[in-house]
Image (cartoon, rainbow, N blue to C red; front, top):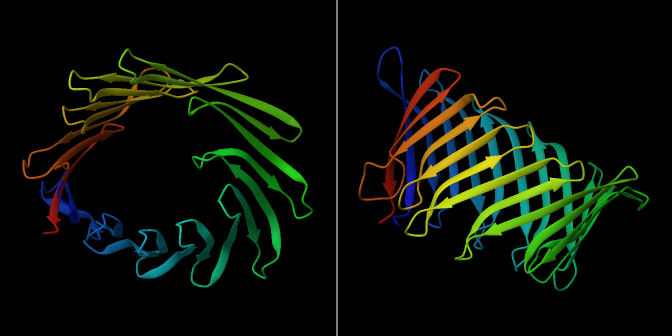
Length: 285
């Protein structure tokens, strides 16, 4: 697949029936987003998000500005193996909003995550442990005295998460994870059930070529979302329903350019408002 260099997004104005520039997205040659711009109705830049990456492809700087003024900045550092070491988030210039430091053991199976104030004092910490696949098995949140405020334990069978126990304010909540697969070993249903019996689940259907044709996500509150795919497993339609089965959102995606696999046009309806978007691409040679 071609590597995208940038995307320009236009929206069809309902009044003038002209395409108005809505957004612009830029990528580096590794496929990482480096810039996102949102335009107002008059064509001026309302917001701009820029990102910088190190040689590992890890994001080191994220800067958000609105109407030319810096709103927030996130700085992140990584070790040579690609594990996060430190993260700082600033609001409106130099106002430090959040400061986190990551301390790993030698094989990265244990992590101490410290939250610091502006003076560098520890506010609270997280103490986490991971298995050989890097999956969490224990997560604990501790106060400045080292007392456990909340904790999470994860249990796996055959490489799949099957249970999570959350401990908070002296009470335990148990979440059970279940999976169903077809005769070809493909996942067709996953379900999360809490100890009150409430469920969230995902159902998947497949085409004859083995790619997904449909995926439906059911939420605890009774709402659900169905995504449809074409023969290349590209999203073609998304329908969202509330708990009464009323269609509250729908989008249709079209792929008109045979030279690439990216969406060319998308129609979105929300609350009886229809928006038509078109996408223009430039690619790296």
